[in-house]
Image (cartoon, rainbow, N blue to C red):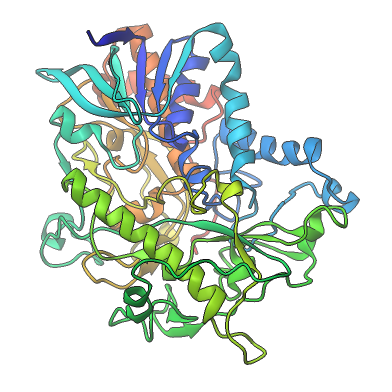
Length: 537
């Protein structure tokens, strides 16, 4: 007989949005069951191993209080447990990896440790139950209400039925949307539908942003060359028509200009970490791929502590464009994920054996895969980096012209009456499964409308990540770490708010009085819903 568990709120998916949703509900006094299909909570920041993509004002404003606690917690963890130099220890805005992509590049296990610590009191009190590794396989729906979700253990196949008055979909791919019969969309919408300047003439539901399976490397003495990966010759010859050369190479399109540019790769440059200024307004930071997403800068630590920097590879050459993993059979999904892993291993082997060096030679034999850093035996990240999900058909759809800098200019992004958070990132779309090049255009600091979290029909299902009511285009700037956290946190707070007051989320959004009360509650919870006067970039 299948065991049944119940709580006030069930959160399916333990990534950034899921953890934030659980925390929001738990702080509100509610009981929560949270599931996660991988061995680590934290999603983008941990199992996917991607340092946080954040806006230029992140140290001052524009994130929620609890997200700032997460960031501060990561820095404090290094101060408490790592052999930092005195200069690094005194660095208020410590960037452990001194990567140019983010002001907080760190090893994924540290983000995991801090998130686990944030959740620990609620585990101890018994109000939080975390089920790992479980994934959703079915849902029981009664009209417009989700009654329960059935989850299955990844390894044993054991099943559990989870029920709650509110269900939050914090999965990376919006897995609950088809299971619950929610109305949703995938891929590109048509320009005739959205009016977006960057949208195609016709809808392309199977055209998704590439997934990537990231990996960490260091560079030490000796020859650490791996065996030639399966299908290496296929990937060595792979060349998208817009790439300007083989995918495995230093040349590729500049995301912002689409001009073919050549990047460099210099393991362990003797740079000063304190001089790294990760500011996306000034530079994308990817000219030297070693320092681009570096997650451990050896000069931040006492001499001898680290034999090498650690570099996180999330580069254009590992973007997998050969097919989508959404709304395909489990066999097809597994085939694509296996091929994406083959591409990542091929990229690493190319780096070791064929990558051109500045001294005229080829290959960096001292490179090592650091699966110990990413928590795997195979050496790659534990989970694929997901840039795009199924998306609900919402009460309020966020479209490009709401926030595009080229459309809105100095007027700034649209102000939503029902704003429940803020975010900022360029509209950043990676090459797609349909053969499209980058779309990377300026945006304005934007708001998150509550209506984008509300399915048109279902009354007790809330999205908590990339599955909100964006479009393919606007997902490009709403998909990043702090925005996903904000969305999830509000989903948890809203569920608890509605339980306490006997309201539905749709009633809160539609009624000015209820909305004002909830927005005031968000303010007290440390969630900013309006931007100060700052410029887009």
